Image (cartoon, rainbow, N blue to C red; front, side):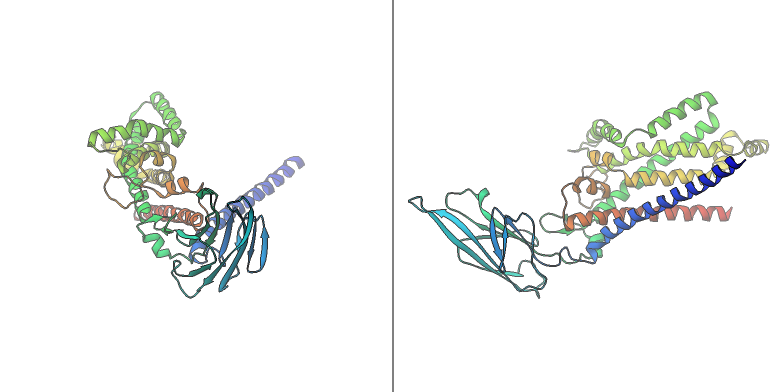
Length: 408
């Protein structure tokens, strides 16, 4: 008796501890993602200008010398000038070594908002100043006899100001490399169109399959089909994407006589196939859970088997069916690999089902590996946006379910 009491107390506290740590871990993850995702809308990328020397062993910046510096040289905020000096070794016609001092003064006008006009340069040698991307200047010192790839360079990186949330959500262009433009409206539209298209195509088929398995099929064949459906639910998404790439994409291309079959329609078909097993399994389980007495009462009143299944059993199982639809929407909205393979991944706003689209998840998966700075922060912001979309959709569905239950 004492052993049983001790074990009950032990497992009670163990469950509490595990639950507490699980909640704390989930909260920490959500807090980290939301902090990273909202940061670019409230803070600048850096506190001040940063310098990155390239192939320069010794450099003096505002009187401070750096030897073999391989990382950023941070310039204090509100500095109005940068004085750069470093020695350069060259050879004359007689192969005599000549050491000269390269100097450059960069004046900073912090009152200007345009990054192309913020800096002005003064130097004592032939240099090449380029603006390869927004908020980045590259200063090159060509050397006689040296190829361009071996030029001494200094990259001047300006801090990017906080990005506008409205511009982020309603922008039509996604150009993170050159112009630092982060507009995700085309990707939001692509995500919603692909997901809702998959729901409209897949959910009716899934409900009909679930009704057939639970109400019209004999137990043994139904168990065989049920096992097959559960097996399909466990197939990795990349397999569905490969099937779509090899079968559905060519079918769409040949059927509609278009140059490429990587379209929104292909993504809708693949996502519909992917959510079928999930919705069928949950809906069929909920339908089988309806008491037998409900069916018998309907049949006793003269209803046919089809009327009983459609108008009696299905409404009684609406809670489980809606749960299956919620999981189907969540999987469709959050799907990544399959969509990357079949959607075409073009970040342009379009409502043509035969055009290429890009989703939010595809953007994160394709660009997170090489993104840095503001670009990386914006990918976290896309993750927050995706989480918010799923939360809103699920909340609307749950609200609709409660409304139906209150009316009945």
